[in-house]
Amino acid sequence: MNPQVWAVRYGTRTTTHAESYLNWHVYGEPDAPFAMDYFFWVLRDAAGAVTLLDCGFDPAVGRRRNRETLVDPLDALGHLGIDPDAVGRIVVSHAHYDHIGNLDRLPAAEVVMTARELEFWTGPHAGRIQFAHSTEPAELAALARARDDGRITTFEGTLRLGEVTLIEVGGHTPGQLVALAPVPGGRAVLAADALHFYDERDRDRPFFVVADLEAMYAGFDLLGELAAPEDHVLVAGHDADVGRRFPGRASGTGIDDLLIRIEVPR
Image (tube, rainbow, N blue to C red; front, side, top):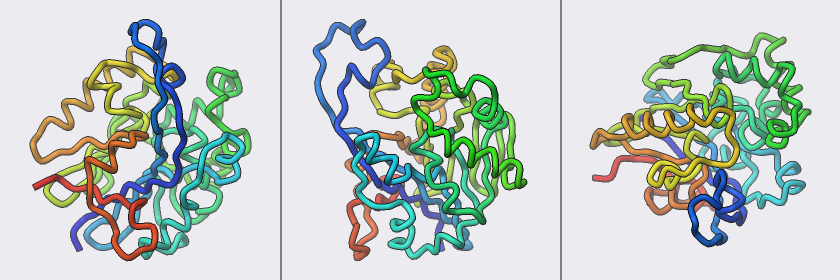
């Protein structure tokens, strides 16, 4: 089997530029609505072992936050022929509600994240409103339990997991990470929320949730460098354009359009 990466489009909502971009008014442009999609990513290595990059929001939390659930994340795994109990590892890009909402439903999986991210969200400032609005207290408590149970592996800087490379960038959250993973034709730069939308990097417009603006800008520059080779592709974390840039689908699953195959165009 060749290594595979799937972007699972499990949720969506309509947002606006003013709601999504930091200090939208400084650009002198009118506001407008646009679609914001929610993804998590399934990585399969050549031996068939499965790693998840994030695990989506809990559908009940999504309803409370007025997000539309297109498919329950764990049901989506089944459509890809993956038994959730067989997921051996979850890489957490960061600890916002739409990225760790199902950790407690995958209790056998090892959790990998940066030390700074875990330290912050289990520390004294996580409850301050400018941070806390993007998290769920029960989910942060589950993260702390996973730490106490010895399920979490942390790192600083860079970590290699087989052919997958994790890189700490910060910016959006104190310990945000990105991942490089092999795909047919090359490698995918999985930005998660270091790049919600392609316009953040292409037009230098940061997202409104930011822990360190300088680190966020530096992250945009790094993503540009990582994605520069011809055999690398950049995958944004919430952009509806992901489905247009990567037309491959998992046909015959019943939710074909939600299972996006990431590969380098030929």
